[in-house]
Image: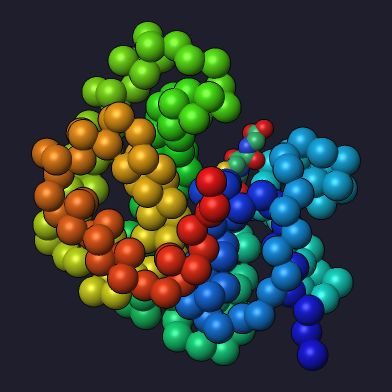
Length: 202
Ligand SMILES: N[C@@H](CCC(=O)N[C@@H](CS)C(=O)NCC(=O)O)C(=O)O
């Protein structure tokens, strides 16, 4: 029997994205809750960030690569659109979320509110217009379709959801009121067992 391990502490949005993908595919795995930038993580991922992943003796880092591998390597429902244009849109959103959204919503708002980064109201204030722009883009997409790239959840939704869930836990959650399609999508995602099973304990 193959052995799957996911390395990284469960509070990480990216660790949660991988957990959701594994759960959606019905893959049994062991979660090894290493913190980032430790010797153990650096041995698995040269950036020291979480997550890293292994399947028997095959090891990967970078969440998009990990979740694409999980989708391709294991039985279970496909987590990517079959249509090539929808698949390209899924990858567009993953790239956009990784390049911009994680930085703004997590690094410039959530981590400060969670007191993981030093509180600096000026950083949060500067992040708010950027957050609104990002939410407006998701709002347009989620007004046209129930999920970001298809009529079912795909890897793009699994990357975005943990970030929006965190935004929903800080005072800036009030911004969401202006984005009803994003709010409805968040609730739709929260009906999934994979999303509930991966919720970090605080
Ligand atoms: N590009 C990486 C980003 C991973 C990442 O930023 N992980 C965060 C936790 S969600 C982390 O390890 N942060 C610690 C640090 O940056 O020192 C991926 O897609 O896996």
